Length: 323
Length: 307
Ligand SMILES: Nc1ncnc2c1ncn2[C@@H]1O[C@H](COP(=O)(O)OP(=O)(O)O)[C@@H](O)[C@H]1O
Ligand SMILES: [Mg+2]
Image 1 (cartoon, rainbow over the protein chains, first blue to last red):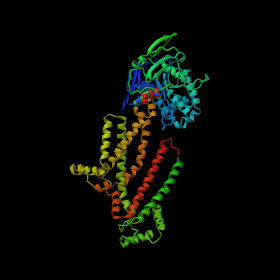
Image 2 (image 1 turned 60 degrees about the vertical axis):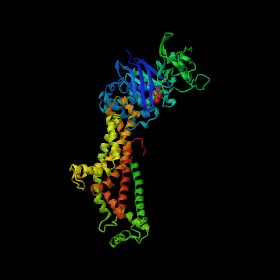
Image 3 (image 1 turned 180 degrees about the vertical axis):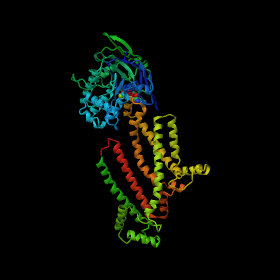
Image 4 (image 1 turned 120 degrees about the vertical axis):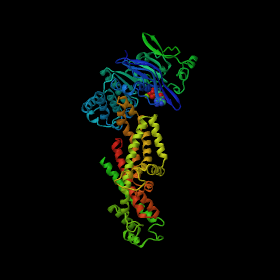
């Protein structure tokens, strides 16, 4: 049985302008100690998928479908029920660590409350474990710096604190939502290496959310490409890089800055994603697709599983592509 | 922190001095004021004034004398209207009354206002929310000069439960109606500010983190929402407290409570400039003092404020 299995997840938001279809028909599985990367442009529904799994959608949002963690259904369950799984079963690292940490609380208090609540530790034990976890994510002088407030750390250190906080209860699954997007390029690699290291040591599963296909290469097993709230392609990471099967994936790969080629000009996919308020009939990528045929305008392609060179993968496209 | 407080105090002191000098200057310049010759002043009072201010002295000297009396002795001088009363006596008579019902009304407004705002925000778009918003709007469109007679009509004339006016320090039944009349609109404002501020903070990213940590809802509210949500309320409370413990003219008139609000109106009507000046300076000093207190509280609560 998969650790996490998501089936036909839909996320919709009621707004004054109408219904926003942020996620449509998302299905995937994460097995024990597996890393799944979810890749897509800003606004493609990555964060909302994660929030739906954790039961953290905004009050105007609602989710349908199924999310099962170790066989337990999580979707639309009451807060008390979810709280037994949050932090201890599934933990989350958020994109903007400074905003995600409470600016009015010392790091010590933000960390110890998790251990005190979930494991009933005493304040002293909780503090000792929190300091140990900050040491583990290599925050220097953790013993003293745990007394500081979030804004007194650098961006990279804030993200380390965020990671340490998420790891406190040794979750089986870590969802890292763009963990390096807010950081300097030099710090990004450090944080990714740290995540990979703690994941290996704790034998955790991970969902790595990013808008940068370049990040996933060394750090994930499977990649799922999201476009306008839908999965357009899903494949083992090496397969995806070697033979992308969807025009959008090809565009994403082309837009990664290749240091190994002469041509450093950054390629960008022309056009913008569709408005999620309008539910169109065709493929969501059709307006930006250089391969589009007539059928793409009228019929949204389903996600089809297929085998190629002994690898199981899936894609949602009407057109045969030989890449 | 300490240097911050000291620095703020050092700024507050000249502000106060300027306030005193300015009100004296205004009074001096006012047409028909006590220092102009076009007004008949009883000889006893004129003698009083002469002795106190040295009206034959140059203006600068007069200001200095007034300033010295206020600052060194908290002495606002004699009344311009009542022969045998000083401004200090008038304030000492009315201010404790206003302070009593004002402070109680303030406590009531803060407690119920915050509670109502929090309840509304945590039950957003449910009946508690609509109920709270309804009350807040109702209380806000009902000014206290309308509410006060309604209270008297119901509780005094119809039910006969409470006296329609007067003041006894040791008898709560004299305090109830002034407190309700004064507190209601402030309670509504506090509830409204609390609610909208709570709703904003509830959507903040750090609150989502707190939920992701699996903390129970009440813990999330208590330790992650309340503090940031109450900061805007706090900044409203400083000036509000001063307003509530000083000038409730309407309350003093309707309930004959004998507070300082009435003294101020009487002084204005009688052109008792020294009383007006005294009360103005008192209110000004309280305003400066409480704003200072709120700023210090802010700095204490918000770790991001640099002193
Ligand atoms: N509370 C909300 N109300 C309406 N629309 C929302 C809300 N939250 C997110 N959305 C929309 O959902 C879409 C997906 O958002 P998100 O999952 O955050 O994107 P990303 O892939 O960048 O993480 C976006 O178009 C966003 O505008
Ligand atoms: Mg996002």
